[in-house]
Image (cartoon, rainbow, N blue to C red; front, side):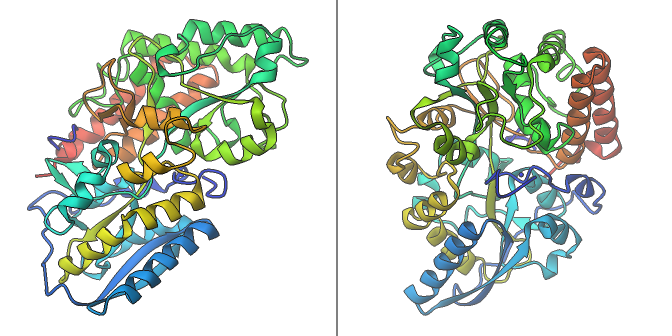
Length: 447
């Protein structure tokens, strides 16, 4: 479904709920029908806010924002409830819309399902035009369905390859320095071979195998291979002909061939301890890797499989409960939450890319010349979830209520391919299962 028609250990992977109980969402009923619309209300009084309990630093930043908002004015009082991250999505799923809070946080891929089940209302009439204009295009892409916005995030995410300059130089491997200088898949494979020749056990690559590939990490981490090969997880309401094209099959066969170079990373320290020269992972590992490698750390884009380098994007976002009676007050709180002070405090706490233009431009990590500028450059070229061309880089995971099925079937296929299964058979099987689910649910159409 296009946006116009239609993240595992929190301590290590800030901004992504990569072990989300997404499968539970697929079983939710009651979707479709008239779009939910919150009541504006007086813009005064007490509003309830739910958020996931993440890292202590994130929790503290959010609690400080709420305290500051409450003391900054006397018309609105926010009552914050933190729910353990492992239970958060299940709690929203199991809660009737009438019992949900005025404002709630949610992980990006769950949004469409919550809209489909009438648990979120459009926020466009309640968030200021100033706030909306300052949100990055990539952030907007994650939160948009049918021209309406249902969520905005304080931070975003991104993928890349971290490299150990010392080990790369020792093996004589030339590596990319920017998006315009990316490796082809063949060049990346050649780099692995060159590194293997200088490595005692021949294991030169980390792909976070310890987090499992049959999980949301599998989808977030390796859907970019599909997009870079010119395919899609789903196109319109169909996976067949998008997920299982010859080019995608070839690309996943290449990924399969890399297994011989991969360190299983059972201790989670393959790259930080110097056992491997390359680590395929996201922004969240920068603090650990930077501390371990210092000036030897380099940040590279993912390889190009023919349609340009691609990365995933999107993370936790904020929306308004569909049954709120005070959406004006909810919108005022979201405006405050998304100001530079609070976005900067949150992204300082968790290291993620700020999801507003002004905070991103001022970020010591992500600004021009910063050590993670690559991630900002990628997010500056958003694709949305449907127009995945060579000219864009950051792709939103499919914005559809059927996403739980899409991610479950793709990650299962990825895991089986990595384990030795025939890529064509595995991808075709996944595509058929996705299409059957969409057929059974009338395409998960959201009016």
